[in-house]
Length: 309
Image (cartoon, rainbow, N blue to C red):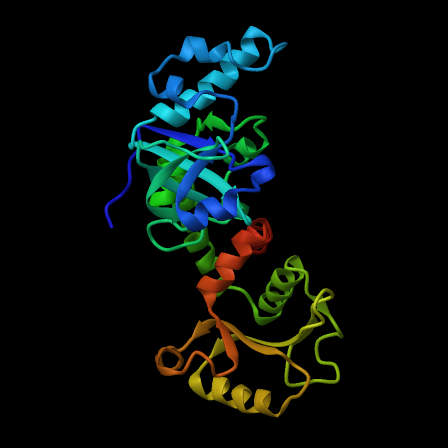
């Protein structure tokens, strides 16, 4: 799909507290209230006169502020990108420059195609993965305001990455790759410690010491939040025979939700088998790359470097 471009991006609050958002999104239109604003004067562009029609007592700055919002609604071209927030997601659209004056004195303009809450790759635009600077527009005390983060917003909608973010991601990947040789040189005991540290950083807790009542696994871990229990077997080097042996042992164990098999040096035979195995065989496999990835994510690079020096 062709990337979108926009001359400007505007945030619109669809009703007080977003109360009109569902109807607007469902039916494909933008809406403002401003019931006391004369529609014909707006269509004629008599904006200085309109400014003076706002409630008595408003100061000149406030009148201008409200006038500007109404003017944007009436005059913004189809190249303007409109966004709103609803249900924990960002919605975006372009709109036809056709204004309808309704019986309740509200004004609407139709959306081109429909409101969207995914990027061009089909990924949800949930607020949890959006910049705080963009989300701050939700606190705007008004109806329409311009979004300063236009470049960032377009990258999010197009499913692309800003250059400085791409550079940081590349540096992070380089760190992961640089960690792999260190991990492959770890002794079995140190590899088990690293694996334990990764799970602990993720909130898992050990239910006992290594070599305890369950001699067939190295780590018996439980989530204190969900009470999910997992078994982890760690081997510095492993072949297909080792893997299949533990796979059979795991099948006889009860009380575990998942099983992990961790090794930094699998043989090519094991790699070939894993490439052909079904993904739902009940075992999650971690190799040196996965260990390096989680080590970097969980701030364990310093620990690895100390082990290597």
